[in-house]
Amino acid sequence: MNITEPDLLFINCRVLTMDAQHPVAQSVAITGERITWVGSDDEAEGLASRAKRIINGQGQTLIPGFHDAHIHLLAYAASLQAVDCGPNAVSSIEDIKSAIAHRATSTPSSQWVRAVGYNDFDLREHRHPTRWDLDQAAPDNPVRLSHRSGHACVLNSLAMKLVGITDSTPEPPGGTIARDLVSGAPNGTLLEMDDFLDGKIPALTRDELTSGVAAASQRLASLGVTAIQDATPSNSVARWDIFKTLKAERVLSQRVTFMVGAGFATEFRQSGAGCD
Image 1 (tube, rainbow, N blue to C red):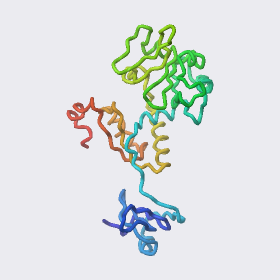
Image 2: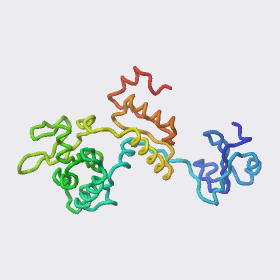
Image 3: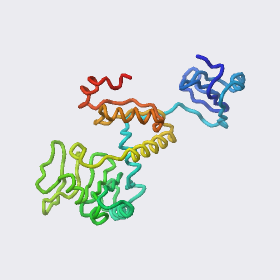
Image 4: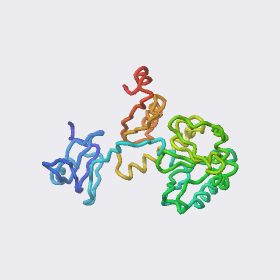
């Protein structure tokens, strides 16, 4: 490889090489997207005058990037646009109601309010919020509050009406509509119902998606994550095209391995997607 004029040269670092024969170095040369040389600062002197850019690590540690082997990137991006109801943001259902109510004040009536990250075990009440809790927070907006696990969510009454869940709605295969123990009416908590809700709740706009993915990519990079493997079960050719666009527009900086959704394998084979 040509290292006579590296694009980037790191010097004065504590480089952890992951090479058992040479575990630590001081300098790294990069040409294009490849590491082309690793060595000591003394050895790097000959490259320094020809390097297009030099970064002095000031003795800090330099390590290979992390590879997140199982992520749902678009869901993560969407979560960054939503109301944070994680344990660091809320400690009770009242806190959740307050956070959602605050977002509702800046959300036009009838538009969806999305909230994410709650965990019933972490809440003071040690239970899931109900549709009636969320009705108090945002009676004029449909609300979807997603559980931290990704396997449950809570809808308020308006949201349930819009997605077509009534007292007589049968539970889909593999899903559970939680119900009030006295009246038997759905209480808003839905377990393993994402397939049922798919297409019934508006997707993020293109601008929202782009903004969310940009924020997600930046946050991952700040943690040293330079490559991801998207393992979303609904990964289709359409989603593959979204990823290609995000990469082409440099919105997403991480390298991507795309796991094809099991139900879309034939579609991929017939389209030839992923072969370019």
